[in-house]
Image (cartoon, rainbow, N blue to C red; front, side, top):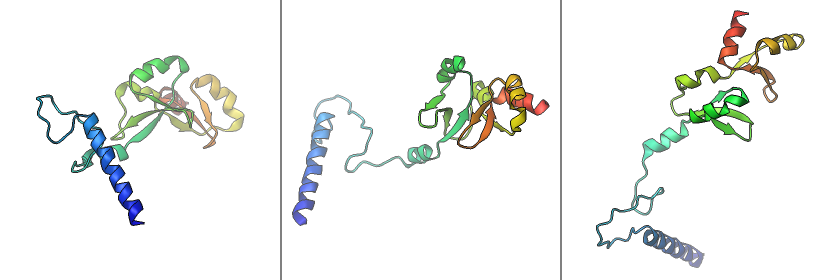
Length: 147
């Protein structure tokens, strides 16, 4: 068991050595070149905890917009979730940019018999199969409230 642990430790140190060599991170560096900043910590490096907290608090704000406007939404930061087949905005603090507010997804509760009428009035209306509820974007939600 000690042999396995020591060989793992040696392999780890060799890996660190080659990473430092690859990124000019050797300890006896004599040139005036700036050191390359790695995206991961090595021995003795510290991890920025504030960045870790920001990444764990990231929220996905669901969006709903026409297919023809997907290019504009992408430019504003919208992302496609290929697993859920939905658009979302990755937000750290839960806020949404003003340009994307009109695409925010809202749930609306509609009787099955009335769905054909509402499909004509609310063009963005889609059915969420997993949650079994109708959804619309902000513009259509405001129309729905006034009805």
